Image 1 (cartoon, helix red, strand yellow):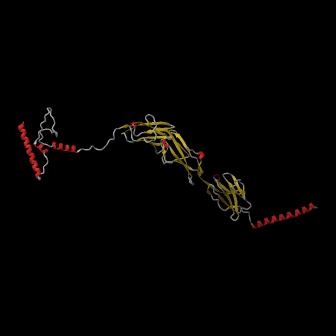
Image 2 (cartoon, rainbow, N blue to C red):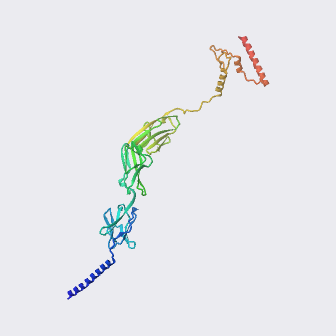
Image 3 (cartoon, helix red, strand yellow):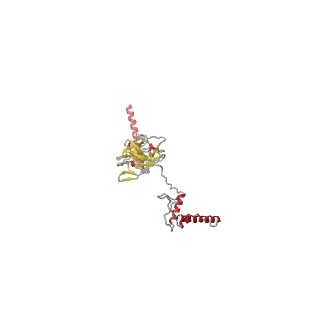
Amino acid sequence: MERMAGAAEHHSICPILVRLWLLFTIFHHAQGVKPRDPSFLSEIQNQTVSEGRTVKFACRVDNLGIHKVAWIHYENSAILTVSNHVITRNERITVSHDKHQKTWYLHISDVRETDTGKYMCQINTASAMTIAGYLTVVVPPDIVDNESTGDVIAQEGNDIKLRCRARGSPRPTVIWKREDGESITVNKSTTVTEYQGEVLRLSKVSRMDMGAYLCIASNGHPPTVSKRILVSVDFPPMLWIPHQLIGAAQGQTVVLECFTEAHPTSLNYWTRGDGNMIYDSEKYHIENREGNPEYKIHMLLTVRYLEPQDFGTYRCVAKNPRGETDGTIKIYDSGPPPTTALPLTTEAEMFEKINNQVWDKSENRTHKRPNPQAVSGKDGEEEEIYATNEERSLNLPAVDESSAASRLLCSLHLFLLLVAALLRDRLF
C-alpha cells in the first residue's frame, strides 16, 4: 500500500514540473527573448607604482549572468581569484565586487618587483572572453654590497678591477667618477672624466690613480645611490732635496728640507752623518708637513744657533714596508755673514780725490805732485821741491778782499815769502 501511495505522489509531481518548464519555454518564445552574452564595459588601465605601494585593477562586466569572473597573472600562468574566492596562496592578493558598478576589483598590497606583468580579467564563456592591464613596479636603484668591490690595495704597476653591482626596476645605469674630480686613467691611451658600466678596469696603476672612486647608480626614479671605493697604491719611498749644500756662519739658524713620497705612509726621521738620530730639543726642531695628495710629506729640520760641532752632514731617512731611502745635506762654515752695504768714504779720502782732480788740470806742472810732507832722500838730505807759480797759488789761503784784516795778512805773507827767497839765493 505504501509503495502504491508513493508512486501515485511521484506521478502527480512530475506532470506539474513538466507543465511549468513548458510554460517557461512558451513564454520566452512568445516574447522572442534570447539569453545575452556578457560584455566588458571598459578597458583595464595600465598602472605604474613604486615598490611597497598598493594597486587595484578594475574589470567592469555587463550581463554576467551565470558566468564567473576570474583574475589571472599571465607571466606566472597563475589563477588568482574566481568570483569572490581567492585561489592563490599569496596573502597580499584580495578580490572585491561592486554590484551597482558591475565591477570586479583585484587588490595587490605591498607590491614587489616580482609582481610586474600582465593581469587578465577573464569570463568563462564557451570561448573565454579576456581583457588585460599591465602592472609596472618601479624599484629605486640599490647597490648590492656583497656583490660589489670593497676598498682595494695594489702595488704600483699592477692591474685592478672594480665592480659595482646595482639592482632596481628599470635596470639602473652605473657611472664611475673620482671623488676629487680628477680624470680616470683607464690605460695609457684612455683618460675619461667618467666611465659607464658595472665593471671598471684600471691598467698598470700608478700613485696618480690613488684616491676614492664613486660608483653612482640611477634609473630615473629617486633616490640615486652611490658607493665609495678607496683605491690605495703602494710604492717605496722617494726623496727630493732642493739644497744639498748650505753655507752659514756660526750663530745663525738654518732650515734643512727633504720632500718624500711613499705609500703606505713612511716613517721619516733625521740623523747626523755618524748615524745618531736627531730628536726635538732646544738645538733642533723637527716638523713634517702633509702635502696633497697625502702621500707627499715635506720634512723640515731647524738647527738653531750654529756652533762648530753643528757643521757637517745630516741625513733625512724615509722607510715603509715597500722599501727605504735617504738623502744627505751638508752644512759648512761660510765665515762671517756677508754684508751688502757699500763701504763708507771718509772725509780725507773725499778731499784727496778732489785735490787729485784739481792737480791733474794744471797746465804749468813741471814735476810730479809732491807729497804733503818732505820725504828723505838717499843721502838723508831733504829733496828739493819746486813749485810753479800756479802750484804756489793752489797752496795760498783763500782771501776775502772785502776784509781789511785779510788784506793785511795777505801782504805780510807775501813779504815773508820774498825774504825767504832772498835768503835762499845767498846761501846757494
